[in-house]
Image (cartoon, rainbow, N blue to C red; front, side):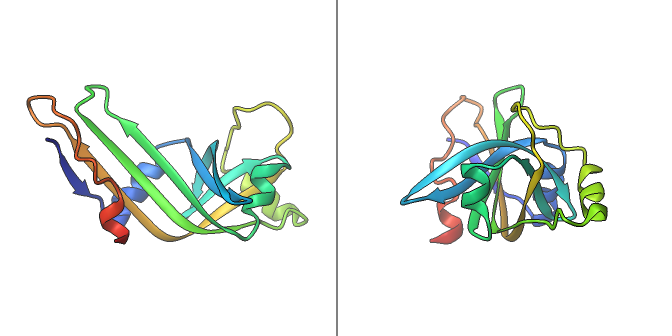
Length: 149
């Protein structure tokens, strides 16, 4: 069985900063929806470029989750960072704010105009690194459950 290592907030932010794609979780109706997104860190704010639509509407000033993970090329280790917080919508009527956000360099993969931004204001940032044992056994299935229960 593999092992888990809890990551510090600083290590979580470092891992978030080196990635550019993640998943934004919002609730629509009674169901959680997960959207793949491109992002950048703005300080400790997860900043996502978006077009109008379900993702943007559902995230406006709502509690959301954001998650990034990566499996190391060897396949014997992986890490995951989870950000829980409230979504905030930057003021795009302010040209200086739009210019500042543009400088983050977020490059959406999805086609279409993306004139809007969503920022996740973190309340909790947690992370785990998992390492498989020498026998190649499965990772411990506890995941994030120990963090909140």
